Image (cartoon, rainbow, N blue to C red; front, side, top):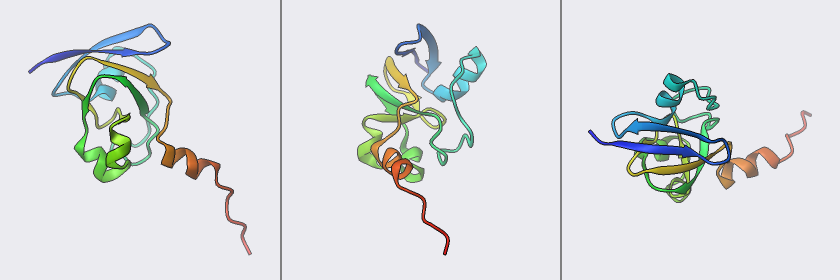
Length: 108
């Protein structure tokens, strides 16, 4: 088991996370206000941009984000650190931003 430092950009918050633990679970233990809802990689509320470092999140790719997005974004409920990290919380993959900006279909 290896421990890594996870720093949240712009907040001054830093935690130590084992490579066997998700970033979200450690945030909850430490009382850090990381947004989440489903905890299984589907809602994408826990998304963060990977500013520096690497994560392991194969299940996240199968669930909510593409392989390409997984290179730049972490779903903290699924992601486990593979190096020291810098994350920018509240940043969403482009596919999510596009969905959010599309007008809702009108009911006929």
